[in-house]
Image (tube, rainbow, N blue to C red):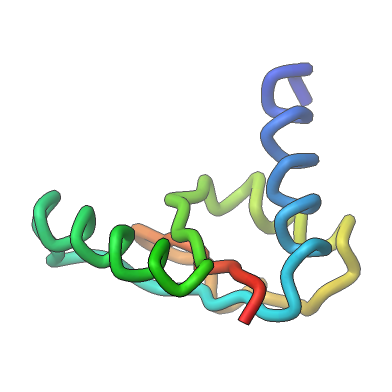
Length: 84
């Protein structure tokens, strides 16, 4: 894996380990405006939503030892993390 991709994968794993929860969401069908509004609302609650590359997120999940998400990572996926 290229060094840039390794950095991204490590950042995904860091976010997973730093958060007591994470949600994998399919954002297909949302407009940019709707997606931006959702991110703003999540930010107010101390949460973040990031679009992820499925293959790299799959590796990060394994590295973090969180769960097996093999069947759920397909399509346009974003991950929500936070502290509450």
